[in-house]
Length: 120
Image (cartoon, rainbow, N blue to C red; front, side):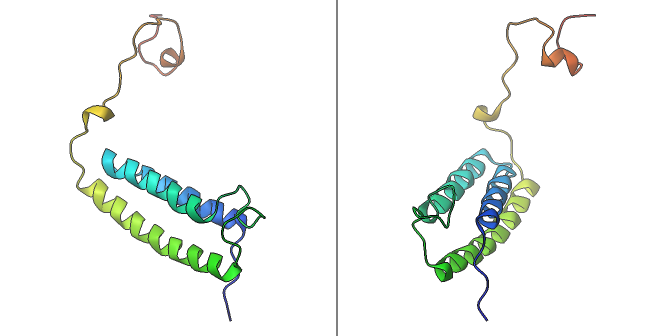
């Protein structure tokens, strides 16, 4: 018996899992690569907002099921790689350094969080 064709909601959930897992990489280069790669992978086959809609590139339900199952396997591998990457995290790159808050001085969000806002 063949597996059921995944629904658009299941495909969106899988895509969101890819993005969420990609963002969990400690290394900036890996993180940006996997986010971009995940976006391109899903756009290459499922272009529209409604993946099974009339403008989707893949219309064959069997092919969509194959792609979905392959993507689930890829997601499992990505999750394992993200765990290993966080275990052996290196120093942050210059592009990852937090920028200091400059100017302002008003009682904004930083004041309500107990940070550098106006003195009380």
